[in-house]
Length: 513
Image (cartoon, rainbow, N blue to C red):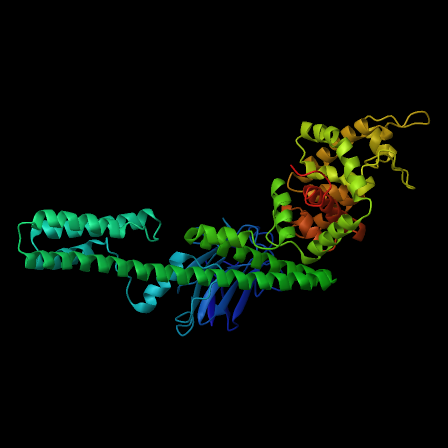
């Protein structure tokens, strides 16, 4: 049984109880605890869940806009203590959480975004004590006392300094073996020899044994820490791999789903999973940056090419829809097998210098220029049955808007330089309207026409929260199937041309250096 006491907000003074293992809170009608839309604007429709898992109560943020906070800190998933207070959105309502004593106590700490420190605390609690630190004051006093009882003052001081040096070098190495332990011990032994040269052989052997014992203690302590850290890293890697499998399964369901409500629920689940995966990756990075970087860059060559292009536009996404990647691969294969690939590439090279100048003048990334490949394969004389003309397939109205002359005597759309300059300005205007991170939406708009895309965005704006950035994102529109099939196919077609051009030497399209 869980009890939610409302300390502020529209439900202030009331108490919500539930015997269910999951308690959903938000403003939507299907939430177990429902807040008032007008009086609690900081609360999202599906804001958070209180979840009983392995005998412990957690609060899980379900991709809310304003976040879920514990002690003023925004959390993705947090294990709750008895009587802990949770705030739904910065400046939103505050609640106190209480649960039966037999619940929320014990059990494995199974968290979606466990941090290294959290795992360390859980491990220490389970063992009943923390691992001794060789440079801790109490530990150093014990070592010093042992040495004083079995060696002279100078020798004890040298051994104590050696232990401190080993601990300091380990701290500098970020908790990993420094590789300097044996060197420090060797130096200490030399000092001991100098001080004990006049002593008897028996006394010298005893001193060496004491120093060796201290070294063994240091090495043993380091081995325990290293083993524990390695286990924690393995747990985080396993956690991320499981989340990635769940994300892939949800995206596959979205690809097969057509019902808008079920699609929305699946996307909400996807946002929660990707948020937890990002948090897990960040926790791993604090312990092992190399492992975290390797996992972040995992996947095949197409995955890496997509990530590289998206980063240029600050449009990176944790999970590219599998159907998008599948269609991208299809277009790449189609281009590489095309019998006229070399001809098209050479024609592209003929105009590329001029195209690059016009795009660079407006700060546009060159990847957007591959719209011309998707439209006409860089043919400046192309004309469509719909009336579009030139390399960039501009309609007369669009051409007029950018200062091109189109009449019975002259059609400047067939002037490659002039139409390229107009196309660059048009794409720059679309980016200015949709945002620099919405370059794929700008390309989709080039294909469908900005009026068509605006119509879709205006329809989205009528939905709850439809004005927000994440609702106007290309990936949201793509997953929710808001774009026409032709436009969904157009963007991977443009990116395929950019990727193939990057591999020109490998494909034998130009001479290697």
